[in-house]
Length: 578
Image (cartoon, rainbow, N blue to C red):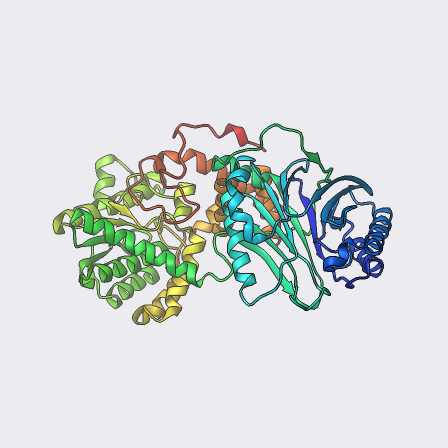
């Protein structure tokens, strides 16, 4: 089970010019967060900014007494707070179990050894961060603590946000931000309490308040940060002695994990961008090779539906008619009435050229040729249908001078849930960087957007249809008998595994830990089963990805050849049974 680090950010409310009263209130606040391994407080947290009074002897003595009383009362593993030195200069002090172990002036970087993390405290203000990123990248910084007391303006939040996102992305680190000043003077500036949490350019948390204090506890997994640096070849910390803070690790039961790490909270813009890039990539490929027609198989399922929408949009970009998309439905032994009718309604509603090519007779002839018993529903029975469909699409594309557009998605590529030389083959793939989870949301978004009004009803029914390759005969009621998620487990779970496996290189044990936090309603045994299944299938099916068709690498986490590859005959023994 991964060991976590709990870091508390406390932007306390100060009583301006009264360190004693400020500290009495601060003590209660600190005790309410005493389970944190380290607590970080903002600059000037003991009484506010007092300008020239900071060098007055009376002020300096009051701050010193307040700091001493705080030091005696707090027995935390690590405490980092803004204070004043003996010359009245603002500084930061580092305490371990109530003992002062170091001091650093404001406006500087201070590198820290926090046990499992290489950390950096920066108190020079968020507006100056980008100028030192090169140095910090070489230092292999894994955790960045940015503390300041910056004035609030109409644009301060947005500008700070831009800088901190950039910093966390460039360094490949977790970045925790803290701003102080609530209760401080309102002239010539107004201050607001703020805490924020960033990782790899994404904002995980943000809160600001001009009237009340702001507190935030961040659960940090060192393995996630190190895994990202390892998988993305970012610099690791050099061997050197640093100020060491003994921060205990914990296994926090309340640690929350997002079940859909691919999509940001407000995903509408992301989905629009993804769809636009899919269509543009196909349009560029067609223009570059001089073809004007696209061929694809349409089953009435989710993957081919998105691919068809992408093809239609690509034709718009190229100024070509919708009829240049040749959509082929190929009924086989497992095709249900629902998916067949949905496929026809979708193709006709979009104005495509519709072709129907039943494959039953051709496959039965093939069975006769190779000596396959049609009543034996084994892997040969299933794959023969997929390969027959691939042959039909490739031959039609030769007839009309077009290209075959692949419909398979990232989830299927990861699990190898496709037929080698069947749906695995195409001239160009448009969905292969999109997980099944993302695809559901994207098709739903497009259905509700109003741009596909003629097929919005059928799009909703396709979204409600169980996912299936439809290679086995329907059940006695004519419904789909072969349901993929009953075989593999929930796609949401496998997509989750894929993200954390590719992005952070997590072990099977860590994948299970994170999944249990993200999917609390799933039984632990089911998650454990799916982890093993995912890892086994992921390694065993690399040979399909090694010879996959061309595609554009459109998403950050994908399996395009230039993004993630390994030998097709690799053993998965390194995680077996763990």
